[in-house]
Length: 567
Image (cartoon, rainbow, N blue to C red; front, side, top):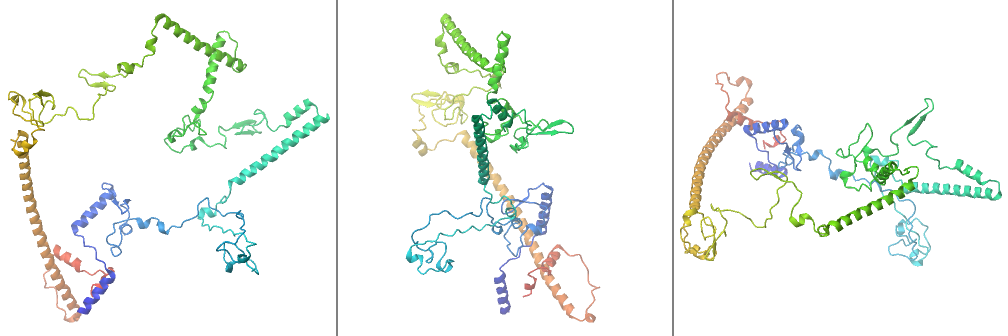
């Protein structure tokens, strides 16, 4: 017996796990109802240990953790997500092998920790690939070899291995552009020298030079070349023009926020600024909407000049914006100067005749009379119908706070050097108001609240009506609580008695189940011909306790701990 106990203890020491508690039928039913409500969306979803919702349609064997691994763990989907410790760290997009040799200054003296043979710092003497010297660099101090450059070890992901531009330096393209610019400049210079030599030798006249330069000049006029975005069809003899140059960024790609500026796909127009919600300055962005491009720069000034040209033409001035813009600009400037002078003279003449200069120098009307142009409309009862009511200047202290049935505040009454309440002529602060009944009584014997604090503490002050009412309410609450506690105690006692009866019945059912199992084992050991008949035994429906005892004693073959039950 002791050996068996020791064996059980050893097994428990190895496993050290407790089986989960058996759920009752009521708990199981509540759990199933909650799962159904979660699937229907009537109950909130279950939350895992990281605070994330668990889909109620996920099977239990995926979300739950086996009890023999960790019984205290809640349902979670953490094991279904990528684990940070298992993910591989790849090289960044800007990392690449360094090309060329490091341009460091060559060492002239032997450095501590360097190779004794060649003097390089990147390896030791046993790893040196140079021919062994008769006298090493450590002792001669001359012929120090440069340090080798050790390349970085890159770990690229799937896209990094297949990126055709990986490791490309954008400055290489800038060097190509500069090279072509230098070649172009050399061509122009050579052509200019050639023309200058021909003109000096007399082979080429000045008129022929201008004609040749016009024909051979690479910078064509805009009318002589095709506009970008145009396609000429020679068969149909028509020109197909696209509304947008393909090299430009599309307007709808400027800001991918759906709440930004509206893009009309039919007319390909975006009138508002797409960067308005980002807080960027419209002058700094490349595109700020069609309206900004239309009404920016000198567009407004141009429109004002055009209006002035039309008005001047109606009055007999021969000016035109396209025909003679310089004359129109000078005329417009002189007109604005004369207009300002005329306004100033008219103002001064009115002030000389009627006076009133002091009124113009006065501060604004809002500061003088505290009046504004804000419209406020009131009802017949004084309520605000339209506009905002004028804010009343208030202090940081509470005002017009009435307590203890008073209709006036403390300090509204003064008599014989003491403050009090005007409604009841009481000189005691925070006292209960008795109305007109207290006005006729002399308050000469009353002591102010601040001065008589010690006396009130020593002498028992008579209770007011409010205090008496509060005490009655407290007593009623205590009685109600006492009755409720009595009911709870009685219900708890009845529940505890029912639970004890159930436990006793279950205990008896377990004992009967043990006897039945032993009887069955004894019958199975007998010969079939010697077994008694069961036809004369009475057959009854099993009770709940018997069913529960059968389930508790039943041996489950799929239980991983079933092999330890018989030990």
